[in-house]
Amino acid sequence: MWNKFNIKTIPAETIVFCDGKYCPELSTLEYKPIIKKYDLPVHVIYVGEIDGNNNLKITVGVENQIVIVSANVKIKKPAFLNIFIKNAGKNSKISGTVLIENDSELKYNCYMHNMYENTAILIKNRVFAGKNSKNELSGTAIIDEQCPDCESDLGFVVMADKNAKLEFVPAQKIKSEPKSAEHSAAVFKPTDAQIFYLRGAGLSGAEVDTALKEAFLSFD
Figure 1 (cartoon, rainbow, N blue to C red):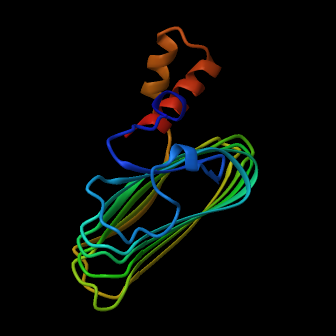
Figure 2: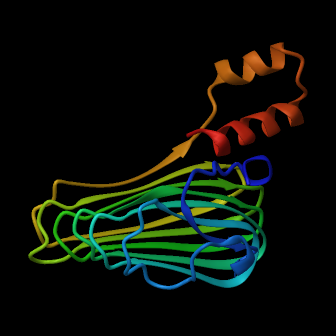
């Protein structure tokens, strides 16, 4: 997983998807809501090339469970990607990173819903928007009423070709006093110093672009 998709594997129960499809042969758990406590973290891995309509649903309904989300997908044809994350387990934490490389049309929605007190959902989204690509990026973070001391962090960082189209659609609905609640969106642009350094190392213009893209997508 690490060599092919830049996914770090750890001792964990696993739920694995390749090219948008659940892979039972690579998974130790069925793809269904997590309502049993596991001694190990649950690692949800979503990798490959996707197109069309794709949905990933992650629901935790048990206390004290750690869930790690690792997604690394490529878009070469128009695609919809919806990730729905719900946490109803006291002291349970869902965290991770979604990496997307888009060279086509993408509509992406990350929906995070804290449904019980002392829960956490922390998701970083990193998108590379290729030449002439269209990118509609939506993020919704919700903390229900009577659910204090929750943590919510939904972030987007995009590195975009100058001819790419970007649209951010953020939403945050905080109905209880949280421990923390953050929602962010930013566009990354390489500095002149970074480009000069790479060109000085002998890289061509195309090689510089490739190196910057790979560094952006692999940055933790």
